[in-house]
Image 1 (cartoon, rainbow, N blue to C red):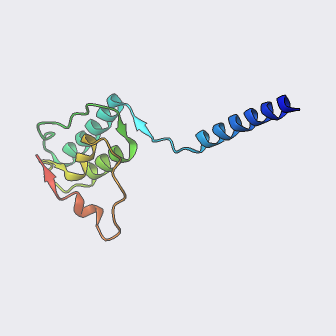
Image 2 (cartoon, rainbow, N blue to C red; image 1 turned 135 degrees about the vertical axis):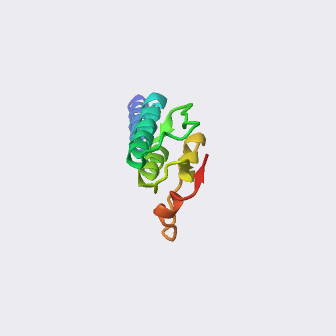
Image 3 (cartoon, helix red, strand yellow; image 1 turned 180 degrees about the horizontal axis):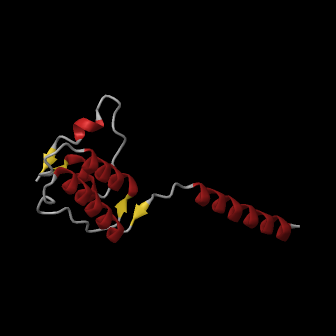
Amino acid sequence: MKDISLKYLKLVSILIFLGISNCMMVEDMISKNDAQSQIYFAANFKAKECNTPIPEPQLLVFSDQYKRNLDLCTIAITKMDCPFDGYPIICMGIYTNKETPSIPWYLNFKELTKTKFK
């Protein structure tokens, strides 16, 4: 009887562990090569739209990126006003090791695209 309850306890423990590990949030990460391509294509699109070259130095991606950081950066690039002479400050998120938090409701995303770094 003791062996059966011990086996049952082990089985229940394993099932609980598997259930908890499946519920953990998996962060969406984009490989550095894919992230670099997405940023390049967003910058290339904006440069053509504004009839300007891509600003130098170009944004370089050194590691895998959080999908949210990359999405915010590429969307901000494509929403910028011309002339395209710098990158939106929200793109600094690709150089952090954290996912960019939610943008507060009182901040206008379009306003974030106006603050640039060169």
